[in-house]
Length: 141
Ligand code: HEC
Image (cartoon, rainbow, N blue to C red; front, side, top):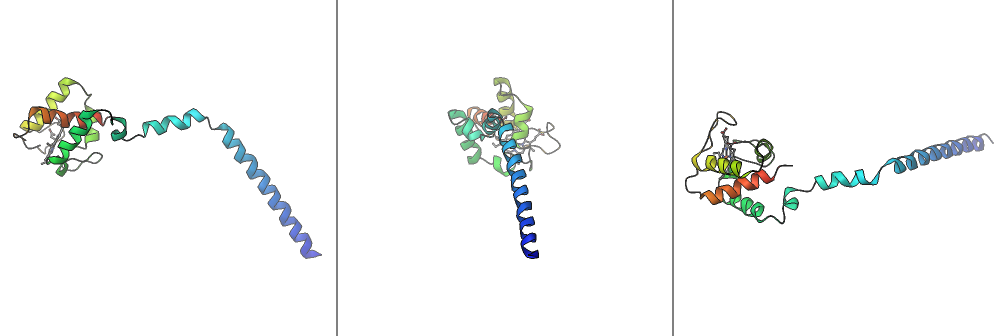
């Protein structure tokens, strides 16, 4: 008898718990607007996905990998030089900026990001340097 009573109390408690959980669960569901859930997903597309139709992005990335840039630059972390993300935050993608930054890569530069100089890359063509800078500036979010 005593055991049966305890069991039924436990069953009742479980039933109440189940009901209250079910109630709050369906409430969360209806209050989540569908458009808000899809908007952030689009912003989270990787730069590769966002620029998959832009040949300059792929060409610039390939050139960066073929050159010594990765020994001093990473996309999302400062190592010797600033991260590409920081560079793309600082400069808009304009013809004037691409030309200026490409000339900094070719002739070397110091003082924009700190005391460490970027060495000159005299063997790079202006075209290739501009493609690499274009790739970097396309990383802007
Ligand atoms: C030996 C290290 C080193 C290498 C190799 C290197 N960089 Fe840099 N880079 C730096 C440093 C340090 C700076 C910051 C210079 C400054 O403060 O003016 C910099 C700055 C830059 C900037 C920003 C320039 C500005 O004026 O804001 C770009 C763009 C850049 N590098 C691209 C490249 C590319 C492309 C390559 C490969 C061809 C490359 N870097 C190779 C060290 C390096």
